[in-house]
Image (cartoon, rainbow, N blue to C red):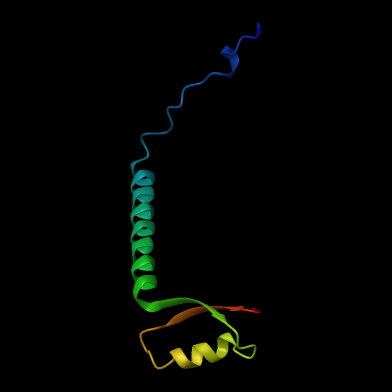
Length: 87
């Protein structure tokens, strides 16, 4: 068994609770971050496209698929992944 005394390593965790300006700033940053997360989720839901294609055609490129999708103006960002099927 250990006989070491941990008393020298103990301390209280009472940080500076009197810095109200710092607390307000931290809270403001937290709310801004939360709001930006919601905006990114909503925008990603409505204005992006993630597409994975399995094809036998060896010449198909993501650039061609983006061109085909360009008629949809609401798609601002697209991620295209093409898997070649050899069978």
